[in-house]
Image 1: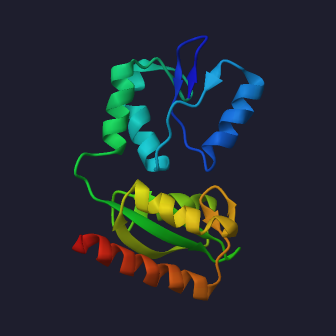
Image 2 (image 1 turned 90 degrees about the horizontal axis):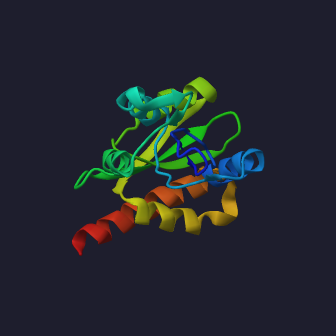
Length: 173
């Protein structure tokens, strides 16, 4: 997010970036959501360290357009294969669907466990933002908020089989 009054940019994590933007705009109307990427606390910490010399305070940084392109390149590596993953919160039964740079996003699982102790890794497939958006659109009626969905065990298995099939067909093109 960028504060157009100060020119400062916020690097942070949110389960719902658009809702976060609305909250910040209600406090300061000059704030705008510039970009958001799939990631978590691990990436946020890396970016905060990378730009520590440009930190104004908290999560606010004095970043140039080149710095923002650098963030984009860091979070979207050229040729780097991404993975769509599913994690289950055993307490609520909700399933998180996200994108990771690793096949078994252990740092995402560990980060989530610090907030949601009963989360466990379920599945992952090679994929990209387009695949993730397709899956999220298909599951839209089951969305409970952010990246969380209310799926029963049969639906989780169906999504797993469907994604396996879709990724297989995509690889044959």
